Amino acid sequence: MKKMLLAALGLAFLAAPAFADPVQIKFAYPSAPNNALFQAMQSWADDVNKAANGVIDVKLFPGGAHVLAAFRAELTAMRAGK
Image 1: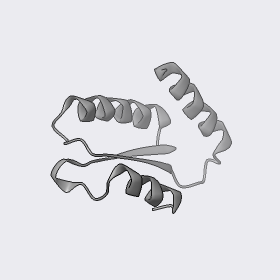
Image 2 (image 1 turned 90 degrees about the vertical axis):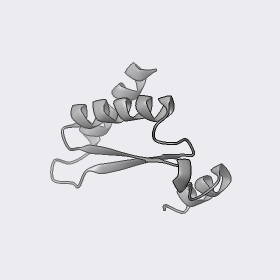
Image 3 (image 1 turned 135 degrees about the vertical axis):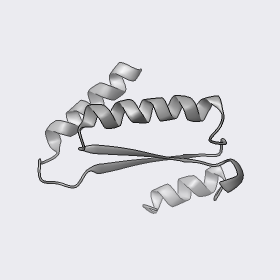
Image 4 (image 1 turned 60 degrees about the vertical axis):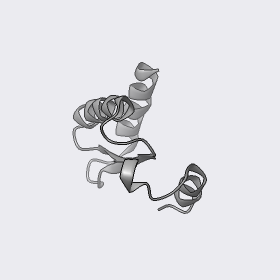
């Protein structure tokens, strides 16, 4: 699955003009930043950011004590482009 994701991101490199701003990919989830899910997601985000050379910028938004919305509200916010 990781190879498929990196391949898809590689195609994004080809489609993005060199002069464009980086594409931001935002991930929000309700887990606290000190659990295993965050560590795995952070490792993945670091790998993508490094491989993207500034074309893609992955940002993680863990919840924990700072949960801003439930999953349903997150989906609604995502559809609205927030």
